[in-house]
Image (tube, rainbow, N blue to C red):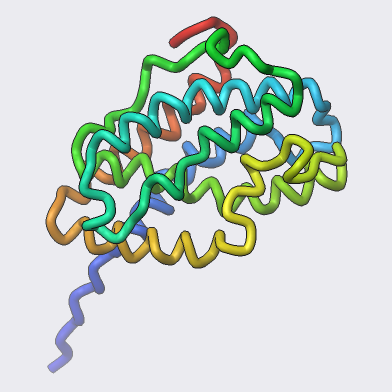
Length: 201
């Protein structure tokens, strides 16, 4: 008698990769940061848009609290200060005048916060490729306007592995569907913000 084995449970990271693939690809297409046609001016404008999105979202994520108890130090994972450094290098000194996104993804619960963090932390992996491209194409190095995409540098993989362990532990006590929904919304809201040309959205 043949007994069919039940399918192995799908991990939250497998779900996140599969269910946010379209939104992830859409972001890559609109940014096109690895294109040979990318100019320094376009690169600076992209940094400005990232700043307008990361600053309020990272502040909101910190307010969720309890990150160290979940194995993460959110302060060392923040990217807003890297964007500030890069923008100052390009002569953008009055950051208070830059538009700030008000249409943020959900991030007020632990599950939603982890969904947002999946997008922000995952971007550091792709950032390593972008960092190399802008060095070669635009001569932008970490100390000449490239800190944001340089990210954790040699620490990127260990930081990602630590995040993977933390989010896997999180879904044992929180809603996995909410994690995935928040990740999709983060990609969508970021795409809308990057694509918009108005002051706020």
